[in-house]
Image (cartoon, rainbow, N blue to C red; front, side, top):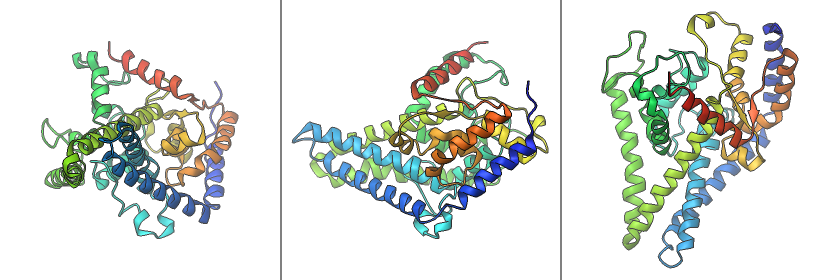
Length: 350
């Protein structure tokens, strides 16, 4: 087995990062603003078409798809990446990581704590990264088998259908806010009362917006709009869940023990990011709809790099890893998703 030169790995990946960030500028600003404009056109076109379904049902279908597309763009290519600080350099309040609030039930501040900090710092370290299995699924031998794991595929389906709510509740579940005894090594940075207040406040705003305000504005077309919003949210949830699982939980992704990652160097951190990630091949439109999380390896390596740059740096990253003999896990959508399902079923049993 080839020995990894972590210093060289760090040097070469840092060079890719600095060279690419040095190119970031007007082209990237134009790109994200164009995506925002398209997202808004899709959203309002979709909402208008939902109300014409009683005349031509096909228009309702088109409206649902446009609204779902708008929600996917807001969630993946805009919200997720903006909240990583990829566009803070623009000094645009609407695209600032600390001020942006996306169109899902998850509170942005909670996302910053659990995803941006915990997950990206401690990627796949058991006991540190709460995103590994989301506390619901057994996806490695690091966890003791329990009877509930037998039907964890059903749990996975439910999580996918309600994904925005699973993400929203994620921090509260980890902190044992409502039920269970808090784990002794968990030092919550936020009071439980604050977590509950923000969870219910953001969730209520989403429910009222999609299932009360917009349907009421439609008057006699209340049910057409209500149902359309429900289906659009479902499509968004299933899409985001599937892409995220394909980037994190294929059969090839590794887990790590906390004691093995103490005092790790930047090169070792890079190595862990690569082994804990999977990419998905596809055309450009596919990458945009995934928020460029189809380049999960590059995203884990460079989370603050504008996402549209990942396709550019991917061949460079792959070349560096190949020299070091490090596997670059990538594949087509269906093969990667099949791999996720195999992992879920594999660890359903002892």
